[in-house]
Length: 296
Image (cartoon, rainbow, N blue to C red; front, side, top):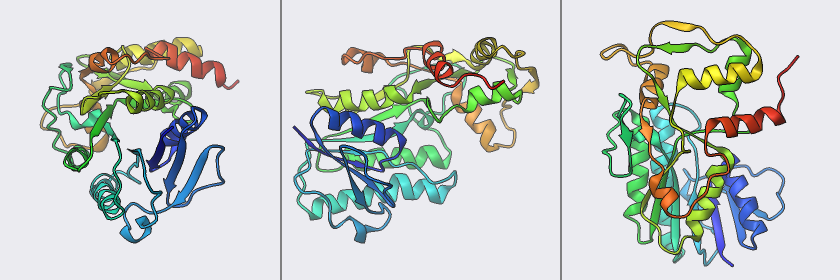
């Protein structure tokens, strides 16, 4: 059984840690302020942005999963989470003589600049110009350049329990279907995120990069319409103008919509033997709606 550190043990890290512990592995969950201990995850209080707090890492780690997330949407916060934190952890591991067999990095499909519905694979150029994409790519490269085998996992939009923004917007009537060409969206259920990471930890030979999205890169208006039907509410209205105009002021929501209009392929992950629990948005959102029924 392996000794595994989850650095940045939030929602996905906790889901992963519980599964790894149930499989017999020894798991530590690193957070600034660990809450009460969870069965099978040993809390480790440390701050990835403060090297002094990283001097007491568990010895003889077999694997490390870097799953820290930015505290907010700013250049400084992304730099801290995806560059400074990665660099500090690598240096702390070198100081303590760690020799892990594999590092995993939870990355994002937001590193891609494609926005006209193109198909994207691991071989596609990742050239998003915003600070978020740049910082995430830098974090990937730091791990790839480290002394240990590293795998970056670029996740699509994550949804699941506690991540119901799209459902809530349709239910509340605030959702709007985008005008203009289809805006393709890529997503993956929270449970499949954790399952993909566990799968890649156990894979005898892993590639350095995987796209982790479900089988169905669907147009946003299709998803909104389907959710409205399931919730029994009116279909969201159509926007009066396209969600993104080239050359327009790049507000955060516009950039986010632009990034979404690509179709990411999960062929490499599928070929490695991974099987999705929720292969499309209908299965994933359907499971959530059974757990969380519409309010009266």
